[in-house]
Amino acid sequence: MPLRSVCVFCGSRPGRNPAHAAAAQATGAMLARNGWRLVFGAGDVGLMGEVAKAAMAAGAPTLGVIPVHLLGRERQARDRAQMVVTEDMHERKKVMFMNSDAVVVLPGGAGSLDEFFEVLTWAQIGLHGKPILLLDVEGYWQPLVGLVDHVIAEGFADASLKRHFQTVPDVPALEAALAGALG
Image 1: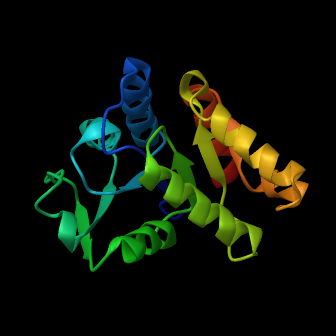
Image 2: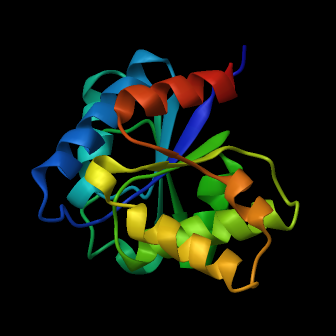
């Protein structure tokens, strides 16, 4: 069976809620436990760093993807098996997505929202059928789900938009959803 890869988009900051860092660490360990490769933004900071450190400590293969302009701003997780340096953020997202079988979005800021909406839009217009999972740690993504509901209610999207992503409450539910999707 081919190596399955999971792209994780998340904050390059830790956030205020310690539950977010704990979920990031648990996600990294869970990926390793299942033999799945972590595809991430290559940084060693914030939730991104927590996922990567936990995945690498537990023996998961990893692929870090970082744009050249962030090389000096974000410390790279240097002990991973592979790293790709891209020209810009757009190429970074594309490389991460193309090297993954599923997308997981942990809590994060504007960058995580951008990444979520880009892969969601690609799914909506039929460019892919990869699972997109929001890890809704302590309800973090509920305002986003409410916004999507509002967009649908206002007629700017069809209700089918919500079929392109799944919200899961915790890492065990994330693991079950990924196992079902990745086989």
